[in-house]
Length: 433
Image (cartoon, rainbow, N blue to C red; front, side):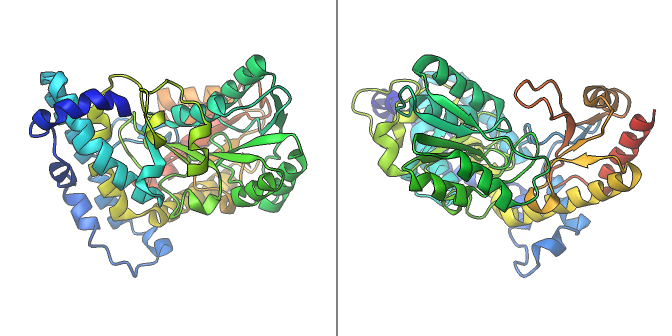
C-alpha cells in the first residue's frame, strides 16, 4: 500500500478532516470492552475460565447468529459489534466520496494507529510489520519472494496449511527447489519427539523451514523455538504460520525466535475479515521480493503492503476489535479455550471410547480434531449442520495427508459448556445412528 502513498499524501490534508479519526475509532469500544477493562488482574486465568457470568458479558459484545451453534471459529471468528458498526460506518463514509476518504483512512488511521495497536499486541515495533489482508498473503510473500535456487531445500509438513504447500509446490515446479516433508505422528507423543523429527530433516542444503503453530488440521503445537535454533545452526531461516495462535499468546512472535511470521487477524483476535499481518527480522526486509512491485523508492516493510486500491475501512475497523481483545487478554482467552476443549473432550471420550483425538490437550490451544474410526466425518458434519444446526469442520480427502479423517471442533471464548454438551449429545446420536 505504501506508495499509493505519494498520491495519498498529497490528498491526505484535505481528506483528513473527513475521514474516520483515530480518536473516534479508539472510542468506539463498546460498553462490554469498557466493563472488561476493569477486570481484576489478580483473578487467575484458570479460575476465570470457569466463570460463565464473565464470558456471558463477553458474549454480549457480539451479534451472533442465534440459529446455529458455531463451532468452526478456527476458520474465521465473528468480529465484535463495536468493530462491525465501525466497519459499516467506514464503508458508507468511503463509498460516499472514495477519492478523498481513501487517503485519509490510510494516512490518519491504518498507517498510524492500527499499525501501532497491532504491533503492540504482537510485541514488536510498528516499523517491523506490514499490514496485509490475511495469512496467505503474508506467508506467500515469504515463500514466493525469498531467493531460492534449484536444489535448495525447504522443510515442511503435510500438516501445514494447504495454501502454503501450494505456494511451495509452485516454487518447486518453477525454480527446482526440493521439499523435505516431515511426517508427524497423530497424536504426537511429546514436543521433544516432534523437534527430533524436524532436526533430522534439517540438513546442509536446508534454506527454509515452514512451521504451522498450531496445525489447523490437528491442533498440534510445535516446539518452534527449538526447531528454529536447529535451522539457524545450518544457516537456514524459519517462517511461522501463526494464524491459529495470534491472539492466544502473550509473546506471539519474539517468543518463537523465528525469522518470518504471518497471521490473519480474523481468527483469535476477532478482527474483521480482510486484516492480516506480516513480520520479519529487519535484516531480511531487503532480500524478499514483494508479491506486487511497490512504487520506486519504497522502503522497509511498506514494500509488502501495496495491493492497489482496497477497502481501507476494513483495516480501520480493527481498532475497536483490538480494544476488546486487550480487555480480555491472550492468556485468559487461551485458558478459556483449553477449559472448553477439556469439557467436551472428556464427555465425548466417555460416550465414544473409540474417539481418537489428534493432539493431546496440553500440546494444543483448544482447537481439536477428533477421528471416529469407521465413521464418515463429512457425513457427520452434514448431519450435524442440517439436523442439529451445529457447525463444525470436516477434514477428509486430503491428498497430502490422507490419514487425516476427522472433525475439527473450534469453539470461541463465549461458547458455553452447555452448548458443547449439546454438541457431544448430537455427535453421539449421529455416530450411533
